[in-house]
Structure formats: structure tokens, C-alpha cells
Length: 138
Image 1 (cartoon, rainbow, N blue to C red):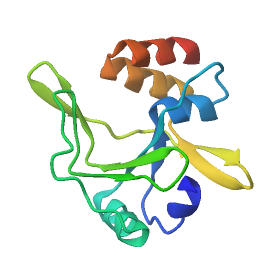
Image 2: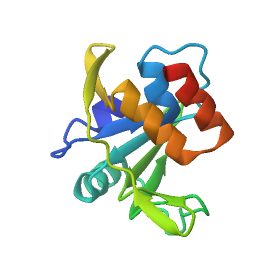
Image 3: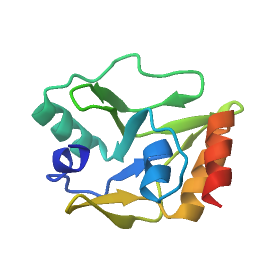
Image 4: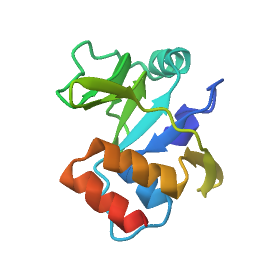
């Protein structure tokens, strides 16, 4: 459902975090939701098409996005993010993958960062669950 919902994207998009680790074939891995990183324009279009409303206060002490929404219809919640940043000390670092690997998924194509970059991203997030996912990727 996620890949189908992203089919009209004009800019590169990626599945990141635990779902991306699973798509890379890592087991065992627990996937609680699907995190999709897109451009602001594509995220707005996807949200409009899916009938989801951006969450105004979607920021946390660790993460913030220019545009953020949760699509709750699929079996796993899909979090759509654009302008995604992670806090490192007093600084905010934008998360924008440099790599884009296409992986087959039920006759469709899903896009994720390559394994090394995904592990680097998870280490940047720094939470224990992210550090464990990074370890499993390498």
C-alpha cells in the first residue's frame, strides 16, 4: 500500500528506519510502522491523495519535520515526512539520503538507502533500538 501511495512522486523518496532494515532482508527485526521520507511537494500531494492532514505538532525533542503526517489505514501506520531533521546536541541535522536502492516488493519497487548509509542514519538517531538495527545491518 505504501509503495502504491508513492507512485505519483516526482522526486526521490525512501523508506527509512526499521521498515528499510527489514526490506534489506535483516531478520529478526520488529517493524512498528513505515517511515517514508519525501520532498515537501511530494509529501503534500501524497497527503492530499490519501486524505491525511499534516500534524502541526509532530516534533519531538529528537526529531522534527517541515511536513509530517500519519496514514493510519494500512496494517502498519505510515509516517510521511518531509524536511526531516534529527537533533544532535543543540544542532538540528537534516536527514536526506545520498543513496537510493530499489528493492522488489510484491511486484513493485520500494526505495531505501543502501545498507551502509542506513546504518549511519540509524547511528545518528542514537536510540538503543536504532543502534541495534544498525548493528544488525553491518
